[in-house]
Length: 352
Image (tube, rainbow, N blue to C red; front, side):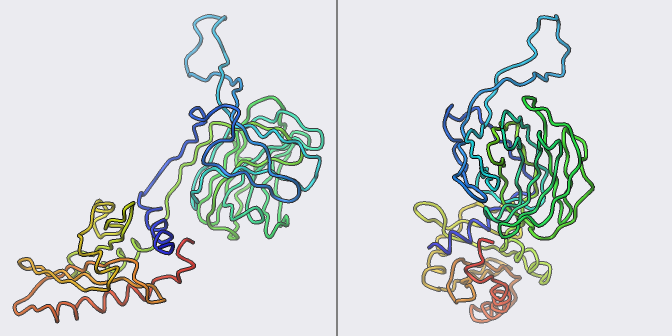
């Protein structure tokens, strides 16, 4: 069952072609850790203390104030990192959700509030874990903005430029990743030349601070291109290789209680629709079904991984012919399903 849900998470992760995620802290309880996020620490010391608080931010309505007495600032919910550990190799991080991003544009507002050893704030991205990730950070004491790469807990590279970062003032950091190309901005302007690095192709995003830095974050937004799920890619490529196929669908048991649903199809609008009840026997018992309807014939067979375990049912729809029988329909569908199975990843890699 665990394998099934690992595969399902991969299948559904890229069902959309484009997406945007804005992290809204206004719905979170004040003075508590933001829900759906995970506090970790890179290097030494304890994880940071992350809480949702309110802070004043400049109002940007795009409309000129009617009077000189019109308010110019407003209260807004932000996420604050409040712990202060006087350890140089101490980087609190707050993982934002569980979603991994490959190609994306990430922007966030930040404010450095205080710090004696360091005054830093940053965004980590393509995070694998606390020992492997990229990050872009601003340093008020060091008066610079730098891109850094951490591999196996060690700093592998750092590229940056001098920049005045005023504590107590809201600024913006931005990162755009497209393939191996990484572009970084500060307050909307490029801060370093495009970096090409192939160490990490995707991963999660996080807020990042260092040592005793107290920093705030808000207005975090990710515009991204979800990756095509494994099975949907197999369906697409199989249909291209066999253009005479009339249809190809993959059904899995999802939900509580588990019910058959389409997780991949040559018609993407079908993804998520209920599948036929016969798929339960195909997946759980290895049963093969066939159905002839006019000039079409459909064969439903188990889709197995490299260990021989069935996790889904494949529906292959073909043009029928005079004298079509169950036996020759299955023989026609069998090589197509075998090719799909040959491309199935090892079970332990299904969530990659």
